[in-house]
Length: 355
Image 1: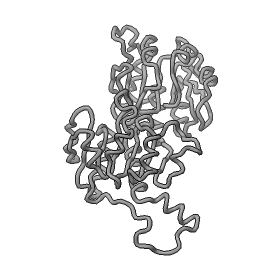
Image 2 (image 1 turned 90 degrees about the horizontal axis):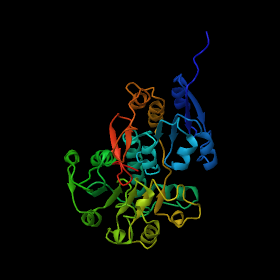
Image 3 (image 1 turned 45 degrees about the vertical axis):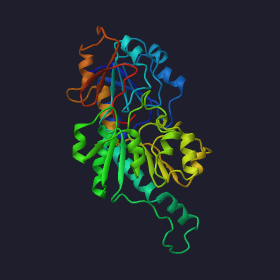
Image 4 (image 1 turned 135 degrees about the vertical axis):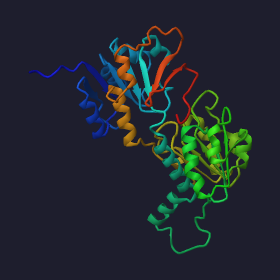
């Protein structure tokens, strides 16, 4: 008896862990085509890879526009992006073609929160600088004030964007003895009570916080939010952490604030571009610690399960069974998270949480 023919092609735009490949390979309906590299897929290879694909698994660095959709053709039914945000996709074009979009608003929450806290601690306590001093012989003897950093105990922490990730960060920081937790955003959050969060105007948060964590989504309102006036209001001893999107920060203004001593230090999980060129001015500063963004293996597995509809009650499997959105009369694309929640969105709306 012959094996059933594979009927769906899924193109994946980046090398994925073996666990993820096992998930896709186990879906008998899927023929998996992979750009087998840790580097971003070149544009011409992306256009070639999506041809006749039924599903596309992409990353934030992949621009999914009309050209890509045209190259894919009418077979394309679902796009799954390994990201919390989806501003790299032309949702208006996607909606016109009745394609479902999946993103991952929650599977990266723990990983991002843990990395943000680690980055904050390392930056505040000057750990990268200390490691370099040990390596290059700069540590000669004990000095009482050498490499003194800043502690969380008794401090005021300000979080810009107390969504899923912002709240997860706050939960992890409070046991360090944080005295006040300030946050700002579009509106006060009921869940802020869990961490005794105080909803305050942005200017208040910036001027009163010892640590500022940026965890908002990227939107026209937040692009370039952290600029020269922003940094000028910060304490000279304050530490700035960005784990949202690079475009939220004016990096030239950040460099000026750091190099002049206007603020104490910065830790960056995200930059523009990614990665920063090795000759970028920020990389010359001892008080600036960029780190590469990283995905949790659990997140990768969940994303890939959804892409092939192999998860129980997967919204993408429902899409293949006829729950199409071609006949929707509004001008929005149907966006589905990995928790099964459906969201209609247009180009100006963004999901909450990290970009």
